[in-house]
Image 1 (cartoon, rainbow, N blue to C red):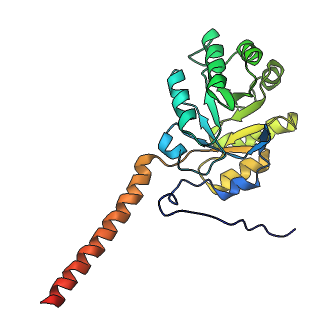
Image 2 (tube, helix red, strand yellow):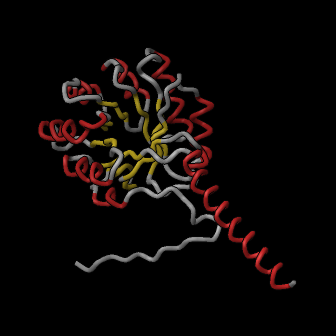
Image 3 (cartoon, helix red, strand yellow):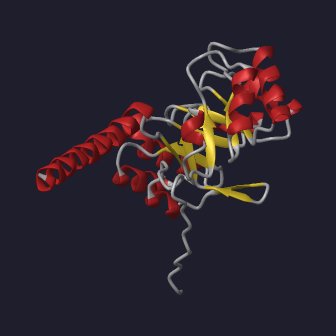
Length: 237
């Protein structure tokens, strides 16, 4: 098979973006309504969401979900959004309502937290026509019960054990779509994909980290300009 070398187009002002590790390209992806999702940027930062090359957004955050936040992310995003709707601290009918609202706002999928009861997953599936993603923390979770309740995608988040947990889940469930955290290195991403993950969620650098690199470059450029100006001043004398 010929090696594919797609043309790449950048512009002067928008070439500085957060890029997903190329190791993610080897994942099979999850096809939702004809669109293949391999990489999900784990962020609610609209500036990062608008300046990355991920296939989708995993918009899950450690606060009670609010429609105004979901709406802001979906409106600003140029890529599909998997919207967090609670399921842990926020539970019961409110989660079902948030899921229905997220679909109405344009989310591609809704994500519920690990403690979500199967009954709530079942209730969500009755009112939405988008995939329900359930977060899984370890291989001892009630995977079969989740799937039977209607969960369409598993989101494995097991820290350093993620590849091991993915492998054990995949052994028992060869066809269930799996998103998994890729970990901090390219090697850990590759191991997670080899274990059976179809898509990878990637945590981008913080805005502070990105600014640190940018400001270091600005300072270096400023020092060069100052030295050049001093040299020109000496030559003119």
